[in-house]
Picture (cartoon, rainbow over the protein chains, first blue to last red):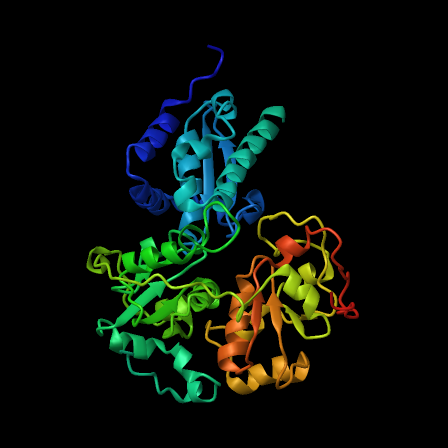
Length: 146
Length: 301
């Protein structure tokens, strides 16, 4: 089979959603929102490093980093009043954490739609998460090309 | 059996003071039999992060819109949905939400399509409740009891306008409540919001621009009566007896303006064109004006 296997942590997040009843999946999304870490302090003085995800209704900013060992890290910030957006970016952050650039770039663009929350969240809102993943991958491509 | 009204002096200046309650009033009346508090937000998870104790959630996408057709749910679905939230036909509903009650107004307007009689807004909405440090909870266990809600017809005509109604309306006042950039045609969506697909930019000819948020004070409450009169009567030129249609992009922001014109200023027969720009800006052969001027009204068709 030519298809690249989904990294284990992303598969686990997906399975975690799918094994729940649809109405409980929103609560899992809320857990992810609650788990979104604060931005590392070094970003506090450098808002210019953060990229706004304009496809999202609330102000969410992301910054992708590759460390010396070649591992990917996603840093993000979104307001407390926008828990859906926080949940989305938290899933992607945990999902790509520590992957290699190749692994992260191989994450399917439609990964968000595999979580089984499109109906509970609404397709319109899901677009924001797809856009976050696309922007994360675009930043990675730019880093890889640099 | 209606729950007693909020006698706040600010509200008595409005045309229909019975449509608003204050945060103090709500705090005092939480748990009153016959009262159901409904939270309705833009963010589908905000209720889950903490809500007014005892309140239920109604989401505009997943509860009020038909999942297939671009329309609201029908009578059967509405009855089932309301019943599942513990709402009866004679319940007093108080709706509150984020963003200056923008989505709460939308929910209230949809309840109006089904003729629910006693439905009120919490002045200041979720923002004011939170700013005042009042209680929020994540507990939903207390709100599980369902009720019987009758199947009632949805009567769109009095408060809802369709595209053909707008074409026939030319010569009467239209209010465009979107941002100035959307009105002029510079963009087809709100600043900082996702592109939601309109092929053409601009506004409906003769529509006056009054962005919805001008009716809201910084603390998310409605502006006092005299300030609203200055905006809508003096500035936008609405007069007694006018037959008004308001629109925005999908009918949510214009629900807020619909509430202001109908319940706070007392204009009868105001309609909300919920097809709004996502319909008009994609429709074939409808007139559009670009720029900051309203433009002349075409012949009514």
